[in-house]
Amino acid sequence: MPGWPELLGPAEEVAPRLLGGVLRKDGVAVRITEVEAYAGDTDPGSHAYRGRTPRTEVMFGPPGRLYCYLSYGMHVCANVVVGEAGTAAAVLLRAGEVVDGVDVARKRRPGVADRQLARGPGLLCRALAISLDDDGSDVADHGSGPVTLDLPNEAVEISRGPRTGLRLAPDRVWRFWITGDPSVSGHRRHPAAVRETPGL
DNA sequence: CAAGAGATTAGG
DNA sequence: CTAATCTCTTGC
Image 1: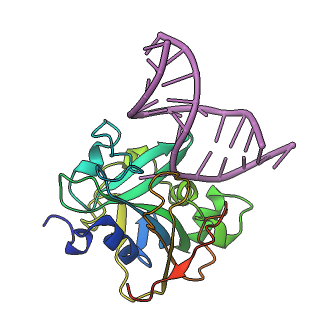
Image 2: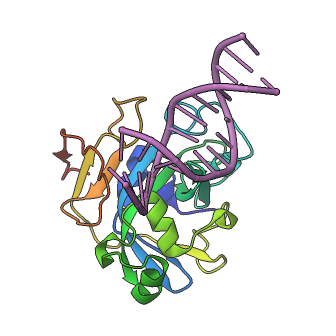
């Protein structure tokens, strides 16, 4: 059974549906509170915009896999691949709240307040000990790999705003987060234009 | 082949 | 504001 039907829509529709979901690895669990959507070859902001490279290969594969990449040469960031195989859409996991294995996560980030343990895409991976070795790991097939994802079973209130760290395609308002959650990142220049979208 | 920007974070 | 440092793109 290839992937979940929930992951098959366009990235900007799938992304908010992941909010409140739980990502697990080695006893540590993070409830996802902030995501960003990337559309692949039609999206100038996507790594896959200029075609396949060894790094972006996973994004062109089937949905439900993890796309991990090295950011600025030092931080690992993780995406969930969405959409049909052959497309390169993905959802970047930007931030979350540690809901299990807090003691383990604390050891990975000494001196940091609990609510900030996964406050940012690089930090989220550090809290979960996700590395480049997890690139391509199948999170949809629950239990087969080291990393698993549970989709949320209750609705959450969602806000949206422009994507962070990107100058390109500012018209795509594709960053989503759980309204009012203290663990969302955006610590840098928080976009002024922030609207709520109860209708999603 | 060399240079620079980028889905980041920590420290001054 | 800047350093640290990997991958890919663009320019010479």
